[in-house]
Image 1 (spheres, rainbow, N blue to C red):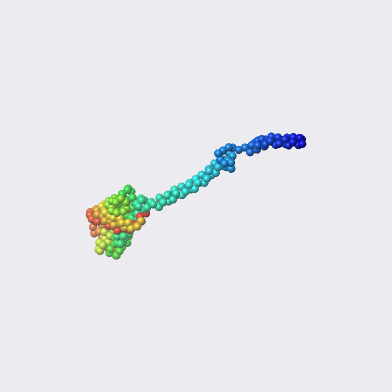
Image 2 (image 1 turned 60 degrees about the vertical axis):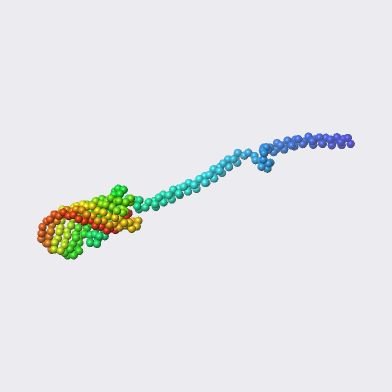
Length: 253
C-alpha cells in the first residue's frame, strides 16, 4: 500500500514539474509581438510586403500619368487645328484678282491684280488690251497699264471705301467714222486720283466700284479712215477729265 501511494506521489510530482516546461516550449515555439490590437489583427513585420505595396503605388501612378500625357497631347493638337481654322481670310494679307466688267462690255479685255503692301495700303495693277475691230469703220485697239496706290479708310484692308493715286501708260490705234488716230510711237502718259468702294459678297468674292479723274498727254497722227489712208496731221493733246471707270468682279485669295 505504501509503495502504491509513493508511486502516485512520484507521478504527480513529475506532472507538476512538466507544466512550466510545456509553457516555456509553447512560448519559444510561437513568439508574438504585443500590440494593442486583437490577437487575430496582430501583424508580423514583413519588409518584402512593404516594397510590394510601394511598387504597386508607383505602377498605379505611372498608369494614371500616361493617359494624362496622351490627353495633353491630344488637347494641344486640337488647339492647333482650331487655331488654323479660326484664321479667316480677313486675317490674311490682302491679295485679289479682278476683271473690270465695264471694260469687258466695250470689248477691252483686262486683268487686275491687287496686293497689300501696308496695314492700310495696296497696289493695284490692271492690264488692258483690245486687238480687234468692232466694225470696219469703228475700232478700239489698245494696250495699256494703269497701276494705282490705294489707301483704305476702314479698319480692314480690301473692304469699304478707298482713295487712289494712279498713273497710266498706253498705246492705241483708234478708228472712228472717217478718221483714224494712232500714237506716234510715244505712248499716252498721265496720272490721276480715284475714289472707290469694295463690297464683299462672300468670304472670297466681292464687287468693286471706282471712278477716277486726272491728266493724260498724248501725241498722235490723224489719218483718213480707209485702207492706206493718207496722213492728215500730227497733234499733241493735253487731256483733263475722267481717266478711270470701273465695275469689277473681285476674287480674294
